[in-house]
Image (cartoon, rainbow, N blue to C red; front, side):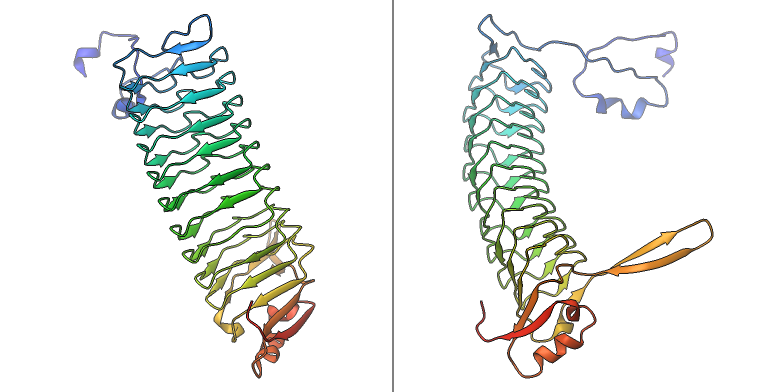
Length: 348
């Protein structure tokens, strides 16, 4: 570092500050953002990216409200992180087949964007890619896509339906949270986990089909989906995490298959319309029920003031009519909290 000892200040332009991580002990680094786009915009609001460009730089047009259209040349392979974030005047965009990667938050907050076609050269829709694109009505996801990242379409309130191809094996947490206009979504049978808050707050959703491939439903996955009226879980689900259905105020019935081995606390909290729970486990002890101990603290001690389990206790619990099953549930420390426990003869 002796070569730099005479410098008091160095001004440079760089796209990736990560390269300076190893120099934090030697330099005081001050970051100043340069205002304005990195590429020209003509008088008609069209962004001009030179032919031959392979990488649209990170934050290239971030916050450029005058940008209304963009022509991406076929030479482009990568759209950088936050490249078009906050371009509220952008109404449509054509992404050529040459593009293989769309960076994180690339179109986040593009509220004027109404439709977009993702080319079949893209394998992953990155985190926050279209978050807050409230004007987005439709999007085509090609068979090439293997994963949808966290928060990818969060708060896309204008989106009414979306078809997710069977090629998608992973849908990230919060991917469709707050898509209040969404009334139809098909989860492909290639997905094994329904991630945390993946469709939380999708108040327009009235039904959902959980495919046989799903083994786990993570915490708060369906929280606040007030339009859902019933849910049937397949016989592949082994774990339902805490608050998975919290606040689903329209939910009237739910089926718990005999494959379930774990149910988290407050899974039915706030499901005030829940009338019927059909539990297919012959032995109530086969399902581990997580609890949450409520503690009041003061300066001197902790005091346990309650224990939370499933919630939704106003519902009638229906269990298999085999001999002794109803009595076993009535003796159970948690299942016996439900308003009534009755037998049913026909599965589903």
